Image 1 (cartoon, one colour):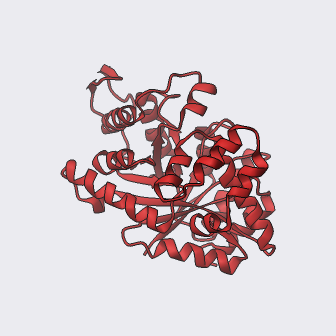
Image 2 (cartoon, helix red, strand yellow):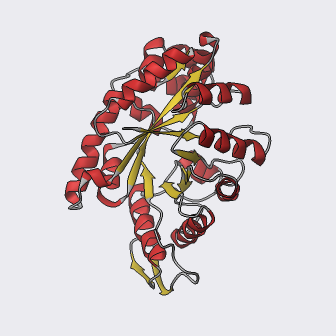
Length: 333
């Protein structure tokens, strides 16, 4: 049976309490894991700590902490600490993010994201083992230290993001899980082949890699408003957040992705949103009235090999719209 997770919204949330309350609502609704993004608002670690202390059974995870703004050793320390605070319910989601955020917000050069992700995963594993960390890589060279506190009895899984075939292959080769986004059900199936190839290269069983696909969902009594919010969300990510999302759409056969990107970059956002046509919304998202949204999510859950479906929300959705959607598609609904 496919798990149903939730990606908590972070855009324009009024307080930390409001975000934690979403996690408590998700726990009450039967969701399996509450994932928290970290962008350019509140830092993820502080909020995850509050979530861990004020929930009891739901897993909590970072999706994602980027691999440039914190050192691998610090990420290992953070994972050990959050595993302790949550009493074994933490899942570490890592990824390179993109140059728009890494360079323009963190002021760090964005280079060779696949290598950096792989080395980060390997170092975090050494840190969590409690043994002395001795690592000689291309990006990192560490020696002489070990975790100063007791390592977690059960290390948290290390799950990574990735959109291109090589990035997904890397997840299959090195990580405990992979998170996909901006994928149709058929696109998810294609990426599962990359996981299998990576697992074979790493002499691993692909079933040992937890596969999670995030789906933008908006389930409202006003279906047109749900689709308007979702269209704006897709346009923003394809047009304004670097080339990764554009490329992901193109790989799945949506040639209009380049025009969406170009129009957004040229400042013609109205035209960019017009290009996010009904078929894109229907294929990539679960938007409309509650019954329609639930049916769309079921298409993903039918994908053989998918372990978890993560419900996310349009960035422009209000608190009330997020709650209505979360409750409408909750596992216990």
